[in-house]
Length: 333
Ligand code: P6P
Image (cartoon, rainbow, N blue to C red; front, side, top):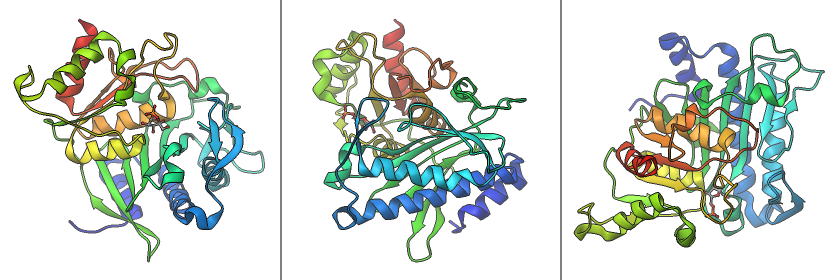
């Protein structure tokens, strides 16, 4: 495959589809540059005084790691001055972050989980950044939380970076899914996969099985059938993977198929699972659908959900289409 840069890809996409105006191209390039900076910070590990707890809590009530805070700051500072954004929202911040008055306001809104998979940071397991791009509502003067509450189908771009053995950036702007690998010597993102398609068939599933006793019946039925293997109703054996880093599990599924599940369960009936709709489930759902997969909350398409709160959670079933449709069907029946 011809190795092209992220910038060349964005310029060519604009020529082909007229979907990436200059301000959106700038936004994506700035976020990609911020992910390079985060990758560098993450890569220092114990040598960089970036590990461990920040001794603070985020809006989710989770103890923040130093790198959570560092990554959030990197994304805020990278995106404030460009004139492409009206506001930002982050898993690490309770309220939205309007662009400071000293900078021009743009037409896009950026949402992100600056460092997903934080429990893996201190033990050197892959982590990543997830981002989602929405257009600011027409006529918006002063951004507020309600301006962000748009369903996932309104996203104009979404992506994630994985800080693993390679640092990769996976991106969609609505015309397929591309993967870029960071050339550390040149400091540039180089396209290494174009139009990724999730294999429709799979033998792998991803779920935190330690929660099994709390699962609702449709999830229990679906997983039991997978575990029954060749002699069971599925007629084949399955393998399980759980990295506890959504970006790493989704990247594996994008490349070799599978289904990722974080269901709601009986522990907290009012809690809709663990993952957040606006900056985890929606961007991943956009990418997975663009790669020919599916993403539901067990009953409906994730990207059709009308958000009510910025940090609301949602059950997640995403990956190979056939598997997602099967487990969703169990919920509906
Ligand atoms: P558990 C990481 O904290 C995260 O938000 C996702 O990246 C990951 O899939 C999930 O939570 C892991 O959750 O309950 O297995 O630790």
